[in-house]
Image (cartoon, rainbow, N blue to C red):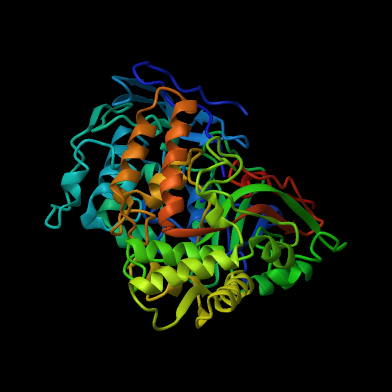
Length: 546
């Protein structure tokens, strides 16, 4: 999950054809199908879930799934869309009907063919709530989705809007216009799966069979995930190396120490302790470029004093205005982050510095105190305010800093709450068991404002069906997102997205903090470092000097 800007949305009422594909903790490797000389060791964290694409919504698993699977489309560094397994995606009937044609000759790493059934079966599996896949909401606009969310749904029930016409043709009927459908068709949720995935899901999640640029070798939990170049891959992202070894760390500092010691080739997670020095460290190659990842913290709806009501909104706004984002960015991120002005990142076309209500994202301690007092008049404050984070990441310093701002401005007990691992932290977030606010953020799955807004704040993404982990629900916001998806042009869609953001600025289901640059470091032997539209590293481009 990574930043991309919207290229073009489907014009309502017009049929379009998508572009044809362009040309163009330390582990030890035990790979047997490639020369170890060009196996690249990279920073990784333990995935929160088994490696099912439709259940992968965090960076640890996302990096891995991105390399193993290939979808209908891919995105270039500027957010442009290029067909991969798809030969064409055509739209008609005001973007409520799509016909997808697949290229022939693709196959999975077990030798079985990639067909229309591979996609449709995977989409049905992910969308069906009985399978508890975190990306179910990505299919919310397809006919039959609501039926698959019923508590007593048959695990074998399918989306009525999906029809396999033949091995290379999929017919998709939507319950509402969705001009972003061809754009999100390259996200994890839309990846194909072989028959073996459904015959033994438990086994598949630990040893996936895929169709992407790399072939899975092994997953030693909390140690490493290894993969080698897939010789049968036919897509746009042909690997220039022989494979990847994701070494799994519980501390970015440990990974950085291994990098400096020559025991790791590449990391795109620079620890706070190295942000002032990594660009001047002569022993490394450093990278710092504009990116699209957002950093926020979420205040879930179920916390006392923070319901979606007047008191809750006043308290959220007061907390947001208690934080001096500019000072924290300067002192902690040292030129690698920019204070947020909305819920999007700068490369996204709907991004705006002029949104009505964005003053809640500016440091204003006197106004914060005033709003907090108004909330106390409704219901007196009691208890403490905590922000949870995973201690094996890079959030410690900034979480502690903003807790100090909140404590000093509002004169309340505010504190950081460390959880030992990403796995523990994300398990609590995904299951709705958080008893405090918690660090959050987003690296988009596809180049559209839809991915930042619908997938994180729409009601269809709540209740464990998507990225709306705080269970925010506002019918006005949902309606604005529907209008955006029905818009006849990118420009008109962006107006609706921005109006939706103005609703979010009143409700603040999450508190926007910063947009983060794409930062990375490698040993001097590594070349080919590049970033995708979302600021994530392009692992297939990495090579190692012999």
